[in-house]
Amino acid sequence: MGIVQKDALRTTIISYLGLILGYFNKAFLFLLFLSAEEVGLVNLIITVGLLFAQLANMGTVYATWRFFPFFRNSERKNYGFLLLNTLVVCFGILFFSVLFFTFQSKIGSYFSLKSPLFVSYYFWVIPLGIGTVFLMLFENHMRGLQKNILPVFLQDIVLRLVVTLLLLGFGLGYLNFEQFLILHLFAYFIPAITLCFYLVKIGELHFSLKSITVPKRFRKILLSFSSFSYLNTLAALFVISMDAMMIASILGLKQTGVYTTMVYITSAIQVPYRSMIRVSSPIIARLWKEKNMNDMQSLYEKSSSVGLLIGLLSFLAVWTTRTELFSFLRAEYSEGIYALLFLMIGRMVDMYCGLNGTIFATSRKYMFDLAFTIFLCAGIFVMNLYLIPIYGIAGAAFSTGFIYVFYNFARSYYIYRVYGLHPFKWTQFRLIALFVVVLVLIEGASHIFIHGQHFTTLQNLIILLIKWFLILMLFLLPVVTLNLESESSRYFKIVMSRIRTRVRP
Image (cartoon, rainbow, N blue to C red; front, side):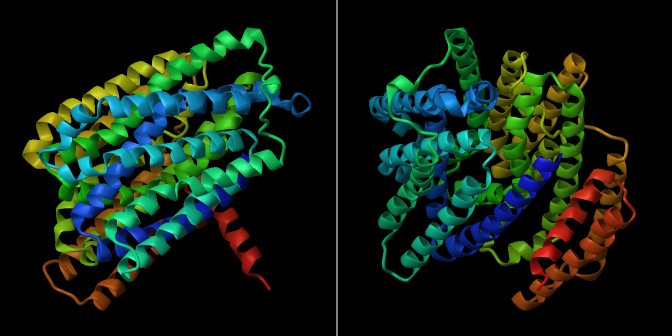
């Protein structure tokens, strides 16, 4: 766990700094300068752009996770693995760009009634998708090299700083909305191009076709795994994209803006989980190669414990201060409160189940994961069709949160039945019990002392800070000092030790 903790700590710190910057963009500058409809348009284009990127990657992401440990050989230039994947991605970009042009009218008709503005900017999805797919390709290769810091820094800090500058340029009148939107979309090329130059510099990306020397015995396996993982990943990403696209079609861009803002707020809960996945994915693949099930079980448990603690802490920090947080937003965003609740529950369980997706995707039973993903996709789609027209964005969030909970526990149970691996420990239930107690205490105190009262912005800020202080004292401090869950306590002690070391003169 040493490598995982060291890199996960660094990437988590960078991700949280990026999260703060992202909140400044999404929860302040976006809401200050853009209408809810414009926010919805930007986020919908980004959502569809991510879908294009996933289509165009043609399965290279999971192929890198699963097989790069077998091809990693500096003397043989890694058998040209990265160049091969780059060529596959270029083909995917060309193929799906043609399809986007071919089906323009049919896709446009889906959004034309409630979200006609999206139809006007439809083709800008393609450059965004191209920048994103190359970022995905190069970032995953860097993961395989266990060089996680640079891609995280570029994606979470540099890209968001560029967006900050563009938002300020728009707000100060130097850019109109269309110029801001187009420059925003092209900003996704900055991390991808930087990583490309870096990989060339360190000798990982070669442009000679002769460098592609993948052994014949691997070609069929690689093709089979990549094809299957491609379908599985597409279905998983469609789940992420489905809510925004269905809301845009059924309710309009304004509600899409509110919903996607709630989705962004929940990303605070997922930062440690994403950092853990970035660092752990190549290690899981290596442990499968070595058939080291003991270390995999240990990694599975430890990552789940850390993810659970930070997930519970983040939930407390966001949900118990929802009144104060929403007081800083425009009134139209208040309808997203229950959407926020259901989304956070789903994401928290996702983190609790730890590395089940990575373990499944890199195992020999990877094909069975498609059945779970299809269930996830179909379940959310059917529930959305029924709940969105009745309950609006809260219905979409309930669908996603409910199905994610069932999906994660079902997938974890299958992994346990097949491999005997599980992420759970009895000590984790002490964390959950403490979480429930603290949640009830803070919610009860809020209802007694501040419910129904109106406060100024400064007073809301003070109340928010008081609640956060109470969460630290009532939840985090007992966990660490009383060692309620050893791995979680150890993780935070390492964090504090590194912080003290860095600030020490």
